[in-house]
Image (cartoon, rainbow, N blue to C red):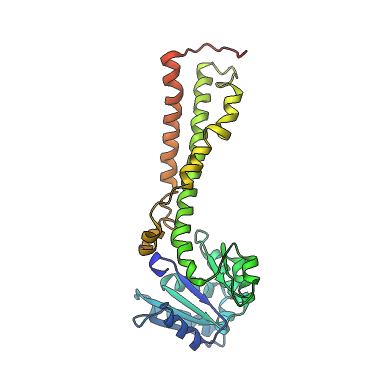
Length: 298
């Protein structure tokens, strides 16, 4: 997951030592990770000092990690400057572990990320009732069905049975869903712009008399029949890359965060094609065997 460019924040109620040991055991941290501790602060001023020190420590670190506790976050979340520093530290390091947190502090951290950067997409995954506020506060909530109960599953957007299924959920299903939605949105606007171009050209040819270019039954069937079923088949079987390739190359997941399939340039290209195809679809038949004379239907 880290190789996909995703920043991992572990929000837990465990002790600092326990949470750090778990982070090492699951490869969230490794022996080369430089850890910066922001813990055991007793005031807002001390919290700001510790955050500034952690920022200096992680300034030139490629593999940095941040460890915070609930007592320090109590002061930090109430101070605007401290909130900004927490977000900057979280982005600067690859992983962040926050210990001894209450359920509401978990949600406040998720909300902090959302407020700090409106473009950032947050995902929260949990398996217990204490994770419910965090799951509700994220853009996408994932609940793990297990021994902790079903409260997290009931409020989540997606439910999985084991934590390990998070990798195929992101790298396979997530990447595929982004690709499909990007193509679908562009195609939906493309086909309607192409249709409108025919009406625009006909209006000019007809001296803006307000008469329609196509019979009404053709216009009604355009979206419902003629341009709907094939895109569903095309996107339904579109996979991009096989699952084993997506799992072996997590860097492919960056297509979504970097908006490679849906951005202003891609959208502009689709609209240019729509204008071109709309003009060709009307002008070529019109000048080949048609005319500018308007004929009423029977």
